[in-house]
Picture 1 (tube, rainbow, N blue to C red):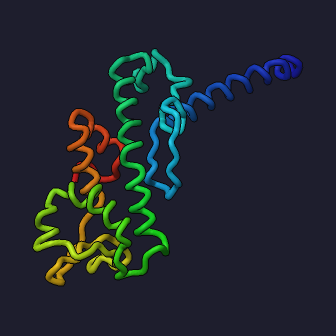
Picture 2 (picture 1 turned 30 degrees about the vertical axis):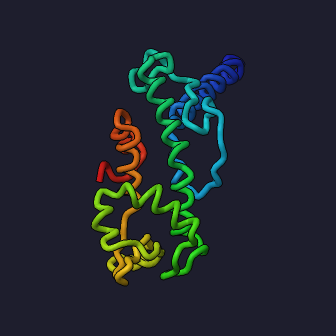
Picture 3 (picture 1 turned 180 degrees about the vertical axis):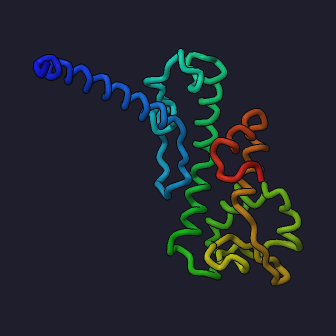
Length: 195
């Protein structure tokens, strides 16, 4: 009996390893690059870091999409394109808000301000109201109501200032630039639905 068990252990171990590998591979399909302040580097479209690793996906399991399904392939390619498009501005915004690069109440540099205005503020659903009489500068400071949160503010030419959500800007940008895939991307990659 003991000899049979000893011979069966390598096979059992192999089955467990195969099952474990499948679960890890299948669970790593999505990537959320803005969860960490990582340096943006171009990657190969078929790289597992873009979430295109399909090793271990089974045609018998309807829970996981099939790579040979044209709709799945098209979605994954578009998803990777959107991620590549928005990752630089997300990384910059996270760095502005969460590093010691800017002190509370400090204006952004001209280069950072241009990127934030062109890539974010322009797409805010209420950008005209936020800009008002005109932009004097963009600054980072503590939110007046939620003191633990830092956010971006438009400083207007009349001296007034108002906060704006970079997440709302990103959602609107994605909807505008990728109308066929925007809602799905937002649903799968943003914490809060479609706000």
